[in-house]
Image (cartoon, rainbow, N blue to C red; front, side, top):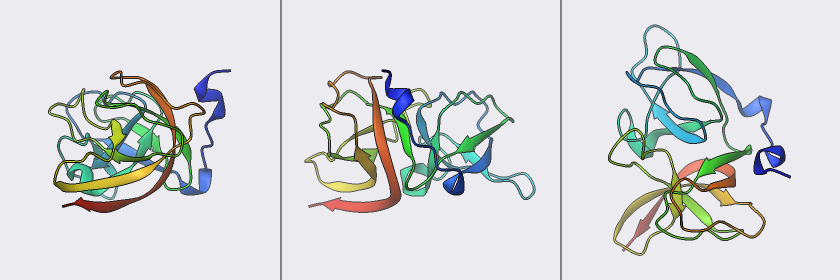
Amino acid sequence: MSAVAKTKLLTDTSKTGVNRNASTITKDRLVTTGTPTGSEIAIDGCNTGGGVSKVMGAIQEDVAAGYSVTLYGSGSIVQLENDGTSTIAFGDDVVAVAGASLAASGRVKTLPGSTGTYYKVGKCVTPGGVASTAGTKLLVELCHPTPVYVP
């Protein structure tokens, strides 16, 4: 059974967002606030816009510039990508990754040991966890983005 079959997309936590980045945002990523045109909910990659401090939710399909997509929020179980910096075990808290580019942003990783403020976005619920390979898919139960400071 594929990981996607185990997702739980809560319609009451979903909203529609419009990609205001100049490029396509890849599926299975976290997205942040963008610059709206009118009264829309604008989204952007985590490397731009509001950054990881303003994560709006997760997308489960590619979205081209100017097009709409469903955003899933707190309580949903979604498929996301590991950034590859560490293995992620079942039950581990995960934080959002800003990344240096749109292609590398919106992934997740475990809380690092280095000093800084990170934003917890959920918990890994993939049975058995995932390897430390960039792009590896995992299931995450989303929570409201919560700042975590590592001294």
